[in-house]
Length: 211
Image 1 (cartoon, rainbow, N blue to C red):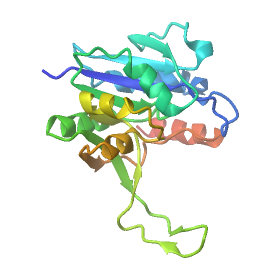
Image 2: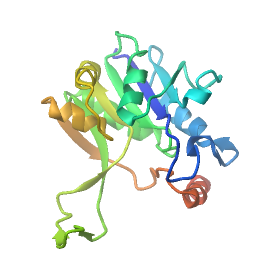
Image 3: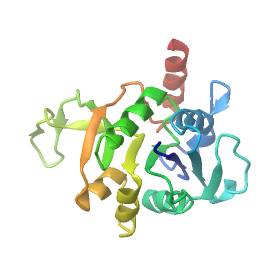
């Protein structure tokens, strides 16, 4: 059996939001609580969940996590902080944004299954439906594009090797790809909303009620 660990990255300051959005209430629970619960669905008996939080919350008890660590100034740094406490025996490591509280268990399972089938990384993607235009002028062909989400799953050794370079990116799969790894895209979910602005909380609450 493959051991699966999930790193939930929740160390951002929420500059665009106006505060630490991962601690905002959503349907009576914190956004982070929803994200941690979603992550637990794929860990099985041998895996676990790492919560990477702001330094101010690193000493907090997080019942939904097996390990809590302080994040860094960058997203990649925070992922590396989480990866450092994932047991070496883990075969698959999943990275999930703490600000995506609506990711469903089936999405976690889909990316893990793709890695088990031979990919170095598996990411959810959704079709781009808006017309895209470059700031410098001209339309961008959207047919070959997808909007990338988390959770993203990785062969543990591939993710560790990619982060050993200390490279920075907002997307871990791009780091693995830069090291020659095979990245596959699975169907994402249009309801897998990332909380970015205060209005997103109301949308997320409506989506939860619809479930």
